[in-house]
Length: 236
Image 1 (cartoon, rainbow, N blue to C red):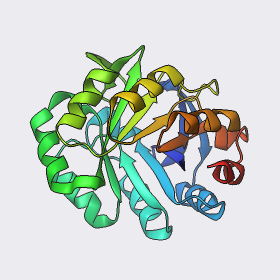
Image 2: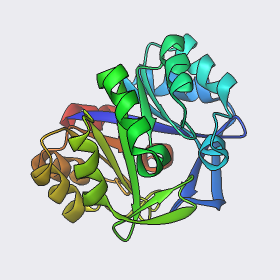
Image 3: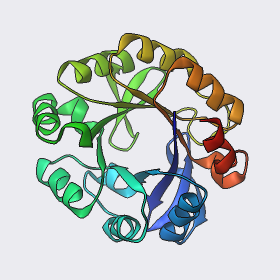
Image 4: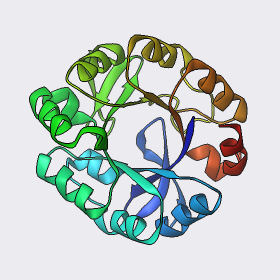
């Protein structure tokens, strides 16, 4: 199982939100590149990067920080947040982003999502964020009428190669992952599932591995020291 440290960008800084609430942010670093290098030095291969300003605005906003991380680290970067046009996906991949995460556009523009997946294949990940099983969009600010499972099955049917599932209510809370929904997705889908939200102990990592997820994204717990990245990587 792949352990993927997360960096959330807001105003060019590394922050963590509590339950996806933009008014409840904690700034952990003013230097995203240094933070990324720290995770790289501890053994990470992948980095989960989210442009929070972009997610709310509908367009990439932290371009400088993103580009600096791609250029100055050896990490495989997966990026989400406000990516809703095919030409932007193309630009990001050309800049060196290894995986582009589609969120809101997957809910609102199925045919565009299908076309992007067909064109870029494994470089596209569908990010499904949810509160109480219902998918959220526009940087977690809106709640749709579609459930996590419904959207996951739809995305798999149009060719998605990978799903990232985040329980927004657990994100940044240092509680525990949503094992029930994660297990349901792993059982129902024939494509890899990556778990995110609430992972705050090595025991959580072991339980997720037992469920059969492909990866686990860890954010706040790395910054608070609740999880040591090197130890987590050793488990996986």
